[in-house]
Length: 423
Image (cartoon, rainbow, N blue to C red; front, side, top):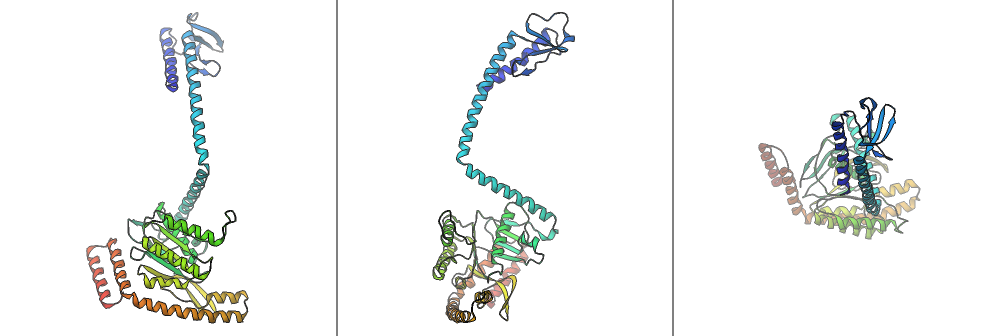
């Protein structure tokens, strides 16, 4: 009501000015405003023939103009000021209520502002990076609803600008093969690989080109990560407790459309407990059919691929010669046991040779038992794994955009490979 009253009186004042222009033949009459007086009339001296009509009051000469008012204008001014004051009071009240509501969530809004700033920085910096790279270095990802997560020759968008010889690696996950266990020694590239997969998916879903030769992605609702090792003094949490809290959050909030990336889950506690936790978390995620990538040093965890056909094991290639490791940073299929790489690093660090030799004998006995158990599992689940490999190929063809003849040829090749036992 106050705002409507203010608008009505303002309009009435301007209508009054128009009426005076016509009635008194004052075409150049203006109606300025100041805070002390409100609206008033300003009439050029040259337009006044003789004496101003008696309707005008408070006549004052001001340079070449005459400033004045009238009883009607004074009445409208009073109503206009009153309405304006009411508008200001109500506006201040609403703004104060809004500020009170904002103060309750100011911490969340602060974090949101920081995230938006970071996102703006990422988009702009990567836009610059892409615009300065050759066209074939970045590609536009294709999206499907329930198709595979397939990236060919993906690269870390930041590190490739630092290292000219960055080695690209890909990833393929689907409903028939929804978990990848990545193995390899320390410094072989596991953590970098996990980070580059996450970055490429984020870039693709916000509309950026990504550093890869080809990519087709399933839209993910959230990316859950469990990386790093550090305690939290503020919450009185050890490294392992922090790790378990983060893992618990993932398990409680993950959906079948999420992407889970875990780096060496369970390493902050005893080997038996850590292995048990990592194994059970993998089984829980397999039941949800979420896409998951696990990086681990626990070679026993690769036994999952012998029991569950939708688990595949990958490893970073390392060439061991004369007790020296040559890191290739190339991701390959299957698991590869690099003998005693931890003991090699221990020897380089200065552990006595007798201690290292004793440790080698102990780990050799443990490894021998595990290899026998994995061979039994492979023979036991061989038929099921073959069926899953066929299903995975069929799913890829389902989301393929090949023509009918190419699909028919691919199906024929799949049939021959299945009959010949070459899958």
